[in-house]
Image (cartoon, rainbow, N blue to C red; front, side, top):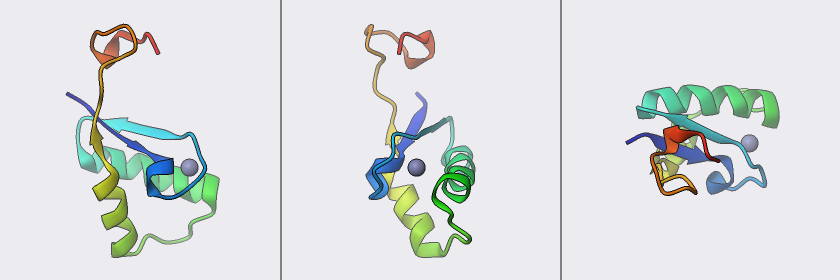
Amino acid sequence: MSKVLRCRDVGTDCGFEARGETAEEILKKVSEHARKAHGFASFPPDLIARFQAAIREEEKGSCGTAPSCGCR
Ligand SMILES: [Zn+2]
């Protein structure tokens, strides 16, 4: 089961979603996104904690199979 972090779950009005197998992978993606898309210059521990808290297990795809089927 992969994990997902939705940017709007950390208080933005943004449709970005970071997916990965591990929290580390997602945090890497989302911090890169936050830097480019939201102009974040640094990532203090409390912000990282908010990102970590917002990571969810990926739900099934709209076709009812695994998310990796690409039906989205
Ligand atoms: Zn965003």
